[in-house]
Image (spheres, rainbow, N blue to C red):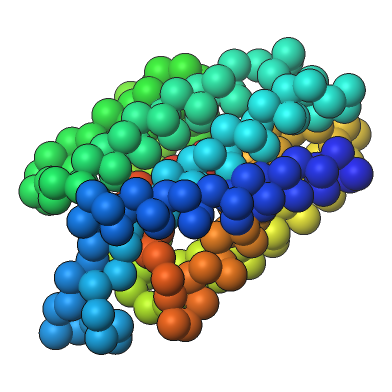
Length: 237
């Protein structure tokens, strides 16, 4: 548990300290969220907060890979590597959207590809609790997993509309997921080091580090680079 707390703290600290740097560049490059009819801010707010969150994600995973207990996650399977590669891809798509504005079809295609990166590296649903346990064949497993990942990414993306809302919801959800996955692994006697617990600890840290800059009145938005990354991490966990 102490190693998970350390990972959470590192992710939070790196995210928090990175936001002012990212904000400075976003203002300089004019990567701003302009005012729309449905928005609550009265002046343009910098986007690209997801860049700071991605830095926190990488820092948390790097520290975890060097710890004696949590590093077992990286040794026992390729799940963490799969999430890192898929996370990097969806983050790059989000950065491109924040800067240039991608059409919805391009974003949807990118989300499906990122979900496919997860699936074909082994991170997928193989059974569902229907009628006891229903084991999915490969094609159904791929389809259901992609739908879950893309659906979660867009759910987080759509909820990102008010100051602190998305980061707060994701932070609370990831802490709940962490408690569930950690206690479940201990109860089943498979040890406390699991990819799900690690991802949710890192994600909670990312949100904790970003929230102080995003509370009303927000000084920066996470943008699609942050919301889509967070959605992918939450669905992967």
